[in-house]
Image 1 (cartoon, rainbow, N blue to C red):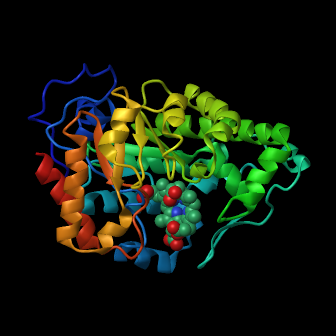
Image 2: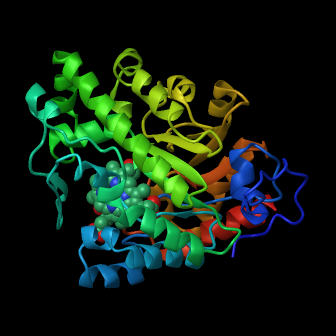
Length: 362
Ligand code: CP3
């Protein structure tokens, strides 16, 4: 169980219809930049292949089937959150699921990662995308959120999420992972009209999808713009910023949002201005000076290098301490890795990190 906030300083008033146990949880308080008795922590990809229980389940069911079966998504989400004793659970799903109802043929093939068999290659391909105006084709997601919410401890917030439009567009155009996103960026530079049309469709669909997650019971949303760090600031400003700004404007005002990207050292101010109460940092940035740079009006999530968890307890604790000291106890720090936990991570090391962060900050 995560620590309770019984000894924390006063909190803002609990809005009508909100469970005070969730509202006053360390994670929600940090999202609102309220002082906390303990630094909350969760781990990106906290339910996954580094856990033997997950691998055993995956030996029996495919990844997409797991995401599409609310009972199983609930089991995986709740198991990981409880086993780790983290301060938030994250819905078990994937950022690419939304591409299916838009008309993409998605497959997770063994060893290869995600593959889209009919990627966008022409302007006409953008025009053929199907509209996504209600969440019905992905109804297994709000169904999972409802089940997870009722299975989780009443003081444990649930994070919903989606891919940000740039990162989704990269997959939709490349057809899978890519080193330089050359096809996606070439498409963007050569046909800005088609690019903006694609980004607008992705924003519309993502807004519907995230609102459905909140309606079903998520307390916080995270936008994963995992690959946006490949862009120069001037290109972010031109090709991404207006779409992100519009997406944030379509999300529920009362739900805190975490805006996460990797390799975005030169984009952070733009990302902050696009939206999000919390900015997610990868491990390439020093947390304290970066927070100074972004100013006191955002909370910060991060930012241990996930590879540190492959070392030993002494190194893990010393690196975690550096991050905590860099945060200087400022209200609004959510401890996390700088990117997803690696499949080769020993579970004991993840547990040691979580214990250390809780004990050090308490
Ligand atoms: O954080 C969590 O525990 C929630 C679950 C979650 C998954 N994917 C489960 C998953 C989340 C938040 C994601 C987001 C996601 N998916 C991102 C953004 C975050 C990031 O890492 O940058 C991206 C880029 C994807 C796309 C994706 N999904 C890739 C590239 C892969 C293959 C590579 C890999 O890590 O396996 C996936 C598959 C995937 N998504 C797995 C899990 C647990 C592994 C599937 C399996 O083999 O069991």
